Image (cartoon, rainbow, N blue to C red; front, side, top):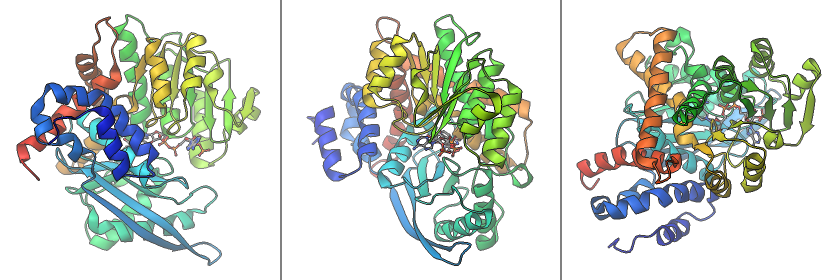
Length: 448
Ligand code: NDP
Ligand code: 2IT
């Protein structure tokens, strides 16, 4: 039935079945390009229609979220949970609260999570969820009421052995706490149903830092493979949220120099580079005061570029850590012509397919998000383990485990992505390595 499987034919069917979902098409296309040739060489996956099954979520939940704002107005948002694949463990993945959230974006994120979670080597399936709710400018009480209403709709579909949500854009410690409190109230159960919890009620040390730290470690591994290191490298980062801040922190610890951060309004360029004091100031700005990155330029006397992304700042290394499709083909050409040697993605799918093509044709190091940012969900997995054994590991223990996991992910990519000229195609490596474990589990279950 699937004898004439080809990327073009497969993608045209997928587009027809999922109209108006451009981000989902993009994420699947990237995977199909590496995995379909592998499937053609390994017909058992083709006979069992594994790629057809992996691109169809197990279950998609969409629900109304009604809440009352501080002025007594009734507000309505749309909530989602896309439970993509639970072949190798309970559904696992973040929640995103952002006005741009729609089914296409959550399906792309849930699909990528399948491969990412598999690469961590921990027993986690894949999901993503969220809402088109905009936390910006909302009071704490408004965010609380929204989270409570969201969880009231979601709680019956999740659980520590069923589906374990976490944070993503717009969902951090404050939101996870409100969501956990409501889950506990509704179910009369204290369990590890969410990760990214506060330390007082089952959270893990290093989870806050994990995605950004892991991304810097991944870049370090890519550099090591070429006999190079982070020391003295000028680094450009986009975003100034959880991932960007801790990516910057680890780059500093590894000897690199960080010269930019951004938000959706623009970027700051600090040619002197940041230090821990400046970064601590950014943490306070973003986490406590919920301010804008432009304030950094005023505070430390450097340039701010409104409405721009930082890719034209000359650098050795680039770390997109804000959002999807923030680095396109033209940006990639600018990076290459400025002498940039590597890109490691803290964000999910920040580089367009054209952008990836330019980076790889220039033989630049390119670590795709599903490998490079897997440290976040990996420490979420370790939070689940600690909850199960009712113990809390030390920061040193957790960082050692995080580092080992990132080194292991790099090794899996190198194994499956090696090209004839010694170049490593990390996209191919991550996709094939992530695919094999999930696909083999699905084969073992038979037709389910
Ligand atoms: P945060 O909400 O903490 O920060 C998001 C940052 O990105 C902010 O600086 C925000 O700016 C910026 N941003 C968001 N949307 C846009 C946009 N449309 N255009 C430009 N800038 C934008 O989120 P995280 O740091 O947690 O997430 C960042 C990325 O990392 C996302 O792609 C996420 O999926 C990914 N990721 C997160 C993980 C985690 O553990 N948190 C794990 C793995 C990946 P502004 O404040 O102006 O909106
Ligand atoms: O994209 C991601 O991997 C996350 N937002 C983290 C998911 C998680 O379950 O920790």
